[in-house]
Image (cartoon, rainbow, N blue to C red; front, top):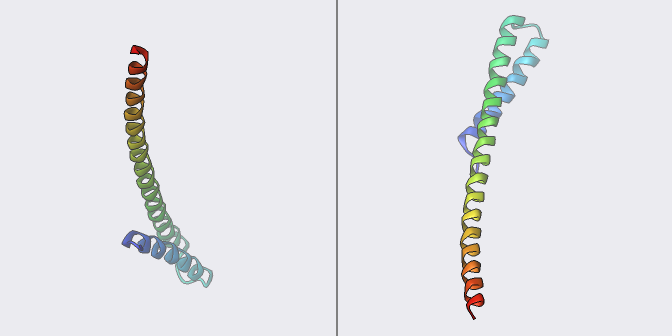
Length: 87
């Protein structure tokens, strides 16, 4: 599923490349190009980091769920061991 954030990311990257190619033809000034391309690259990097932390958060939640399930299994095994020791 393509989200709006993915589309914006690619628009920022493609716009940066287009401006750099435009600079080769000599149209924009160097200062304006550096500022514009820098802002576009910074924006795309922020979107990448945001995506990374979203995946990291989902992974952490998954590990917490697995740990909870393992704790339940561990408590059941301890109960079984107690029952076995009584006999």
